[in-house]
Image: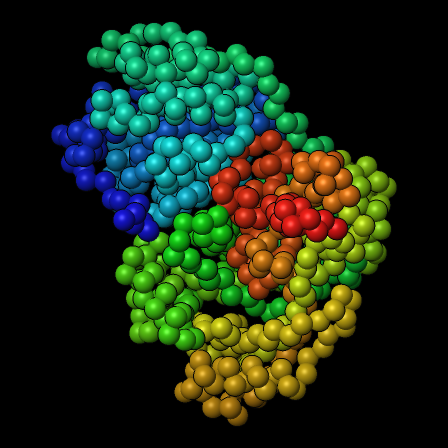
Length: 595
């Protein structure tokens, strides 16, 4: 049975402080000087920093993250030699991740990267399967660590990598990482003139790289090692050009996260919204709960939601807009309670993020985000044009400032254009309450939720179907249902205390027919029957987030921006397929029911 958490490594420590894997019987880095080895074998072996001179974007892939020493070496070199406005992606696959304490011990001797190591350790990736991306925006450095075995990690990657650091344990101890299949996949993910470097000159490694289309050469090794290997691939291919400008339609959390994702990359962005101010719709509530959806199976949706939760915690924590009050979740019926017990017995997150509790689980890092503060941070410095509907959304149109890429993140209004009317959106009215004089020590969730916020209590929310364009407003019936829900969640509260000064807000949320969000290039429904790959050039969709918008928006926006800019995305292919807008047209095509 595959466990829902990656395994811990069994470690010993050498006399000079280097970690050694008992299972692989191999050290993580050279005893002669791990940082110098990283620079000599991997940076020099891939022609760095010369290879990224003048490049706005550069991507390094790595097999074997370990303690992150190679990433730190690349980061430090990038900071010194970074081209103006450049972005470096460092994507590493690791199947047996170190915990923060062991990584700190391993990195302690390296004074030359001590400040960077501290920044990395403060945001050390959570031990959970799948990808986690850490942006260090001041340096234009994006670190993505993928906890997976090599085959799954490589299979889920896309993009064009400019360099590869092959730094797993030795081929004799870890043959899967160095297999012909792995090297062939590496080649398929390589940009023109991509380079690869490794300490190993084993014959099987050389033959696998050669068969994959690399030209290999032995070079003098580091310290006491006689030789190392450099490889180069010169297959014809063209990386995607980044857009020169992006227009985002919608100033809720989806649009604001998209604006933030493009600005990280130095891409000029303008946001348009028909309302008078950002967050006028469902993103304008006084508070929003950020908590995980955890599935027991290994599906695309399960991978998406696990990665989304960790990405939201990282971004909102960095922006200072998340109150990690903790969330207690209890099942509403026997089936839900059994599912929670199963997750607690074999959790997909470590105990620092998920603990068994009475009749449910506790997520100690989950909590309440402050939407108004979040939107202000995300849109700080971004031109926002409000108060006028955008009639034409084709890239290059004057209505969107002539931008060459348009992202539709318009929430409940996503289907108002001809190109998007086919999308099966379901709209619902949600009413939320805020009681200013009552609170809890932690949030509670069981269908509805109640959470401490700003010295008071936020609770709800209702789900009532509404039609497109239908006006919504708070009503007494919804308030009564929310009061009944909070009484069930927190029976110790008195109704009179909760009612005092109660404030209600209603808005419309949008979900898709299958309850999964939309993120990706906009399909051309009119041409889909003849060409299932037909897309509207330069038009992208981000929406259908339902009631989990604040949890889903950061990772979906980051993945969409990476795709638009031709960079390695965060989500793997299985998770990306779960949010591809074309999935509805593919299903309709199979049924012979295309719109």
